[in-house]
Image 1 (cartoon, helix red, strand yellow):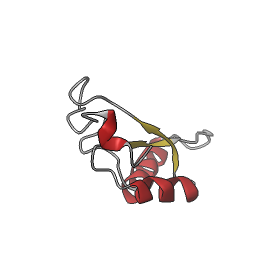
Image 2 (cartoon, helix red, strand yellow; image 1 turned 90 degrees about the vertical axis):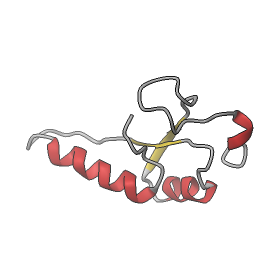
Image 3 (cartoon, rainbow, N blue to C red; image 1 turned 120 degrees about the horizontal axis):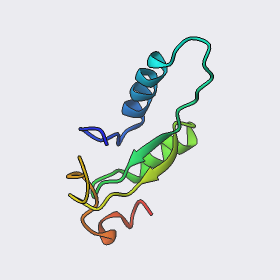
Length: 83
């Protein structure tokens, strides 16, 4: 998990480019980008990322359940607009 988490299309595009820049020449690798769900994630941003082919999936981490998950979801009710 990155800090800060990838929650916008722009952040995902930039991170994907960082990954691709690290791939050795001649290797065929396509990173599949995910959006990190947070209590305050804009549903329109998630939809835009999917529609633009940037986000392949969204990932849900309960807040503080694992490394760098402090921005995670505190309650499913908090993300109902996204779901």
